[in-house]
Length: 350
Image (cartoon, rainbow, N blue to C red):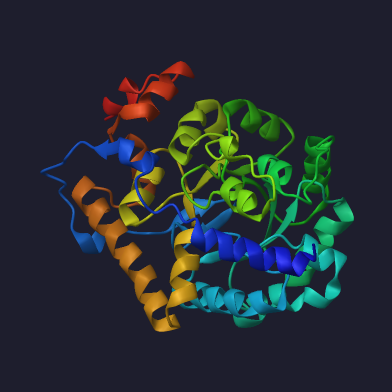
């Protein structure tokens, strides 16, 4: 199938299979603080991730590009990023590296947001030269390398050989002049994977957990022989954040993508250790259906919700969240205990 058509199929099926109900964030709740001793206006949204000082913890995460029809989506996302000072990653640029005629669908992001923080994006199959070309294509400030093994296995035209991924990631990390962020695309990350990445020199990880866009469902929609038994594959975003223990945080900054539905979920992710929170599917649905003014209002609403939660918890800055007690219950707690994580420790934080 033509790559451009595949990109359009991904958008169509991502919108059609959107998971907007309950997810793992519902297994996380806060201990109430009736004496927070701060005011709403004192709260600050700035954060540090991947050597960037970001005005907001919200990241417009990788969504699309690679077809003429995706240019308008990326343009709209870039305007939102510019107007609300959000970092933004483009979708996989492998399409443009193989067919330069679709490069404009990515370059529109830098055109609309010339001074913003923009991240390029390639797959772990990319060569050093391709990674450098992706960065140059956007004059990018950072580079995402995405991991999507299960998606590729379910994709009718996907890869089947994942040999040498870690070695290629390490070579890219050592060769490009911008920070490298390794991200999952919705199947979550285990501690073992994170330790392999940090040992290879990666200092920024996006756990990309299950709960947001489900690419197993997306690819099954495209397949004549769907494998629906794999649609619950992997770790949720919350489970992935619990996998990132002190050893991981000592070596890398962690970002959470997958299933954040509003500002309260963002604060839950931050208090679970995330320095930033990627939003993709939720924003794609807004951009697809509403004019830019309503999209900007949606982002403003998320920022307001984050600050309401911060005020109620007594958090002047997001970094204070690492000491906030959390109650982790349900299936998430059960699975975390099986992985050796004592969730009671989170409830007893001071």
